[in-house]
Structures are given as structure tokens and as C-alpha cells.
Image (cartoon, rainbow, N blue to C red):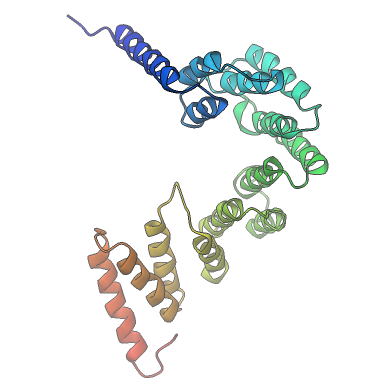
Length: 276
């Protein structure tokens, strides 16, 4: 008998609701639960949790509903026609919910519509920065806009012009994790555009200095900085980062190759006139 995947899905969904009900017996479901599910790409669980929250204000409820509606692709134009007015209405306020709604509206135009509208997205990000210059959502908007400037748009835009625009946005970002994320992307863009390694490395090194990386592991970044430093002729710098790799990740499967590279670096540094 063939498996009934819808039945399996229903059973799993049922387990989610049972788990949610059990959690409610021990402690009340809060909006933190909703946002946690949403952040981990579990919109059905988030929707179930939202229905169980005992006390939630109207604006928070409306924002959560819009966020969860956006998390259920594919979205049609009629879906957008319902979601965007809701976000626009919320953005008329003067609180963090309004700032987040305006950010989401910009992101919708930037990446989530079938035909992105970068000009509209940029106008909304500009409005966000004007109304809430210190908001986390403004800071996040600078990062997202910086990625667009680096990798999207007119192919005729010279690489250094792309980086200069992203660096101007970076200057406005004050939250260290967000600065790290944009700085890392600037470094990678410079590498992709085959710019001199001395224009790549400062960005990667600055990102590493902040720490706390998520998508790319610190191990990956350390070996990248070490190897690129070696290729650029900065032997002392290459040695520093590769030795850090061995110290911080002693069981890495890459360590044999790292030790081989370090032996080469130490030999070069020991030679007469060895570079630093």
C-alpha cells in the first residue's frame, strides 16, 4: 500500500497542536512563542500559537498576521494586495511595530514580489531611516539595501562603485552584528569582483573581530582570511589566522592541510628577507 503523505502531514500537525496544548498547561503561550516559530520557518505552528495567546494588543496581532501571511509562499498578486495595505496601515503609527511594518513593506518590494521593485523598496527604506534613524529596523534596512547595491541591479555599475555605495551604508550601521554581516558581504563582493586582496581582507578581518557568525562558521572565515593573506604576501598575518584555526578548532578535518600551509609560511618567514 502506498504511503499517505497527507495523512502523515496531518499526524505531524496534530502532534504540533498536542505539544502546544501541553505547553499551555505548563505555562501560557506568549508572543515570544509566536515569533520563535516564525523565525524558525514554522508558520503553521506560529499561527496555532497566535490563536492561543491570551493577551495581545490589536497592532501586534495585525503585524503577526501579516508576517505569517508573508511566510506562506507562493504568494499571488491578490495575496500581496491584502498584505501590503495592512503593513502600510500599521506603518502610519509611531512605534516599533510601525517601523517593522515599514521595513517588511520595503523587503516585500525588494525580494518577495514576483517582479521586485528596487526603486520602491529604496524609497521605503529612505522613509524608514528618516522617521526612525536609530531603529533596529532601519539598521537592518541598511544591510538589506547594501546587499542589493553589491549584487543586484545594473550590471554596468562598476564593482568599486558598488562597494563604495555599500560602504556608505555601512557607515550608518551601529549595531555590531549587523555591521559584521554587511562588512562580510562587502569583502565577499570584492573577492567575487576580483579586486586586489588588500581591498578584500580588511572587511573579512573586521567581520571576524565582531564574532558570533551564524551562516558561515568562524572556522570557514579563519581559513579564508589565512589563505588570502598568504596569497597577498602577508605571511605573518596568514600565520596568525591559521594558528588561531588550529587552536580554536583542534579537531577540524582541514587541519592537516592547514599545518602544511603553516610549515610553508614558517619556512618563508625564516628565510633571509622573509616577509611579515
